[in-house]
Each structure stands twice: as C-alpha cells, then as structure tokens.
Length: 280
Image 1: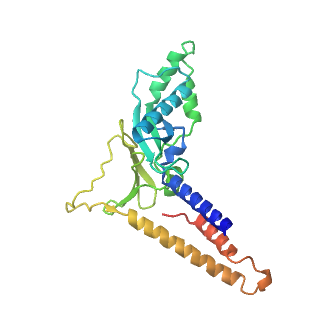
Image 2: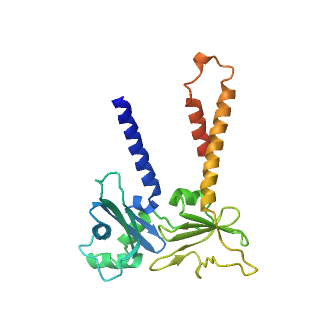
Image 3: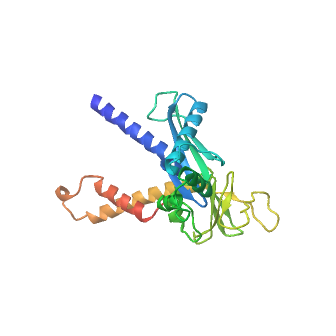
C-alpha cells in the first residue's frame, strides 16, 4: 500500500511539473536567441523569496549572459530593454512560498557589435565576431510563407487565437512574448509583428488588429481560444476511439494468449495518430 501511495505521489509530481513546463513561454527554455535585428537574453532567478527580488536577480543573470556573449567586463552605453517577465508562483522544485522568475532582455545587434569593438580594440574592422556568433545562435525570426505547424513547433501554443472572417485571417497572439502571427485561410503565415520597446514587423507599416464593433464592412474579431481547447479535447477523444477500433479489428482472429497486453495496442496506435495529426 505504501509503495502504491509513493508511486501515485511521484506520478502527480511528474504530471504537475510537466504541466508547469508546458505553460511557460518558449523563451524560458532559451539562454539567448536571435530575432530580427535584436538578440534576446534570458535570465532566471530560482526560488526567490519575493517577486521584487526575483525580478532583480533575473535581470542580473540576463545581463551576465550579455557579458558572456560579448566577452565584455561591463555593459553600458546603450539601452537594455526588458521584453517580458514570466513568474512561476508555485515552482515544483522550490519550497512553499518561494517563486521562480524569468526575465527576457532585448539588445540591438548593432549595440553588441559596438560593445565588442570597444572590448577588443585590436580586432580588424572587417571581422565581426558578434555577427559570426549571431549567425551561429538560434534564429527564431518568423518568415512569411511558413506553415502553421512550423510556427507551432517553434513557439508552442499561443495564449489566444482570433479569427477575422471578413479578411480570411487567423491571428495567433503570443502575448507572453509580444508576438502576433497572422495566417491566411491556407494556414500560411502572411505577416507578423513583435511588440515591445522597439516594435518590429514583417512589413513597413504596423499591423493594426481592430477588435471594435462592426462598421458594415468589417466583422469583429472572434476569440477562438476556448473553441481551440474544445477541438483539442474532441480530437483526443476521436483518436482514442479510432485506436480502440483498430486494435479490436486487428486482433479479432488472434488467440487470447497471443494478443498484446491489454491497452498497449491502443496506446501505441493513439500515439501514432497523435503524431500524424497535430492539434490545431
């Protein structure tokens, strides 16, 4: 009985931890990455006593990432903007009452190159170590023409999804990063915009997403986030039914002694269907 309770508790801890990881923004898993003309640095403060202390420690950790990247002793002379902050108020790996904070800093590429030249005055002008490093690190800039599944794999689940039926557009809002992705009816990315201290976009003019009342020509934006969750649940149920139906037919003529362990066939088939048809 004690062994069963221990296994149950371990299962709950693993499930809770996995759920917490899934809810984190994608950038919390990246120490640094390249996006547009900027380089982003992530700082983490684990098990902080309060929000203020966590935010400050996370900022210091992110600045240290900038120093490591540029090999500079000190950084300054250019703005270091905070793009986003994420707080886990109930981290599984901390004692009760402690929190973990991630802070995402945003630095222009040109500023990093200037800092590197100052810290390495003997470097030839035609050599750009920072540019070489930026080329080497992961580039998370979206591209017009990318498919929905590519965006899903890169940034994960958006915080909200909006439809603009009149324009035939679907809008994914990654508010935990400041990124807005717009798809057409064929699930192809048509434009994007990164909000924040220095907005960037895939086009010269800003993307304006109006959510006001209809004017006769436009329809209001429709929040499809709840509908998305319902579709995911329905898809999951359909996969399990298909898996059960397949296994029933597959082993109908097979003797009981030669059949796979109960539930194993259904689980394998369910996982296969899940990989073939990713969620919306």
